[in-house]
Length: 211
Image 1 (cartoon, rainbow, N blue to C red):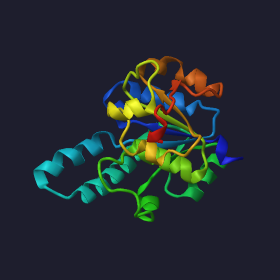
Image 2 (tube, rainbow, N blue to C red):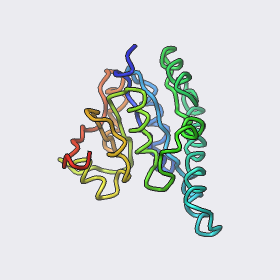
Image 3 (cartoon, rainbow, N blue to C red):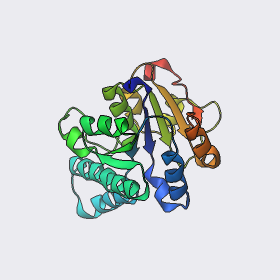
């Protein structure tokens, strides 16, 4: 199997506060596309943000804690599914895919080996999904968000509107295809996944200078 065919999907942690969480998990589990799930931080990252201002810890500490928050949400996701399994290395990710499972990336261990990644809130799970896709040679990225994306949106415009994070375009590989799925895509997501179709809509980069 070529990693070029693997879909990297970032599952936004904001879905945890909605009844949609279990439905998205069920839809993802139906996928016939070899896939990797990159978890958002969800309420665990919200706690990091909230307590940063109360406790006064550094941006770097907050970043490291937010990465661990992704792992907490990732473990929660894996427990809700049947095919989803935690995977904390490239080897574990590839082995899970080979078994027909859906690896949920636990990012802390791998990211500790890459100190060049900026340790600020500018780098969230959005950007890390692009980074992982580029590192593994995956050409398709899906962002699942609880946001309705306007028609004809571009990645450059969505970055300006703070719908995707600042670092996403910097980490996205040239030629990578990006889709965004939102609440209105959920009803048909399971069927589309099962048919090998990425739910949501493709999003162009927009201004080339941003890539």
